[in-house]
Image (cartoon, rainbow, N blue to C red):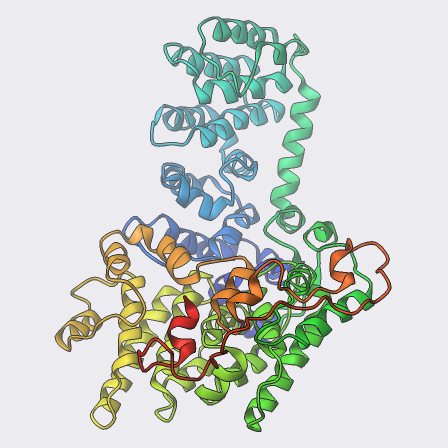
Length: 600
């Protein structure tokens, strides 16, 4: 636990930037780094180098903290940074966006201006020219460089005529291009800067069809001033300097952050909502409405699915966290006591909470109930919370544990646990890398240690499925074939646990696509109703539009007064012989009905 800033060195402090919950701006850590001044710059650049290292590929190759490191470069912007920017600005757009957040945002213009040597501005302009001429450099980055020229003009370190000549040269060099994006963006930027030479240039560009019609039109230049708008340039340059001096305020308005914390410890951070992000959360719903929806899911059963209650609780999850957790705890208690399932409320509550662990609308600390749910005996957990709840819990836990590894290690190394449960827990580490809570290097180290532990255990009990899950994880991390872990898996003939062979091949041969494989095959985001339907805790007939058990309050708009309570409409029921979900399937497969035709 971190008690004060003296408990952690600069490198660790920088690395911790990426370990806070998703949507949380670590203002306390950033403020501490800013207070340390120039001494933090080597650590920031070292982390950023990991993003630009072309030899680093695959899941977790670009650490999540580099975005914040990039926005802290204003702590001490020195000309020596030009060499790093020369490499960085020539990277692919995905790499640049990993650091800058969006390739179009103005921080790049501000920092490129700040690292210029005012005593050697001519050489600096030649460097900018080399970037503008480079086809590898994104047009969006080139626009930032053009605008940086006029920051120099406002600061009187560059003559206005020199800046104009550079712009004229760059646009005229591209006059043979039709519908050119770079020319269009530059000329659109010149509308605010003003100047007769740019108005004339715009006319020439329009005549030769150099500008994109869907980006800028002739009419856009009508209001353009013939005079250079120096006040505009000075205000823009001053705004850029303020952004560099106070990146916390700038990032507080960034769409990625809905919360902030002054704490230095990512695990125990106390967070406050950023006021401007109220639009991420729905308008307040009256408590009786929330209680009615909670009651509806508590009264649900195999044949009655309260669709609208689930949808509304999912939409207003920030008002229902505690009562949903209470339903989960009650379900865990009932399952432990061997009680007969009488409600699907605990299942729906657990699913709603797990599905919203990564939302920016609400932050909650619910790792303990989820871990307790995982620790239920397999049959009792399945009976009360469904066949697939463990998958949803594993997907949620990276956000709740925020990089903690011991809770999951303990469960994987517990030889008394069900092998399927142990194998399922391995995915936690891969998802922690994907979400940025765990470094790629630490994850690989953990997988190797687990493999060694399981190999020793295998001599007595056999650990095929957990090893298969580790093999899946190694493939998702794109470990090379000559890696010791991969060689051992091949030698032992270990197959895949859940990962398809095709997806494993993609990750191994095209590491840059591993993130997409995790997103589409492992995480597989789906609407809440589809997730519930695939969970097989409700009969197929419960999802028919005319068979939902409806209450009047579910048919009225959220923000109107609820209608007087009416008895529920009768539910349509199957008149044929009902097959219990745990009974043998009538198709003769010798499997339980819930494991066979019930899913069809």
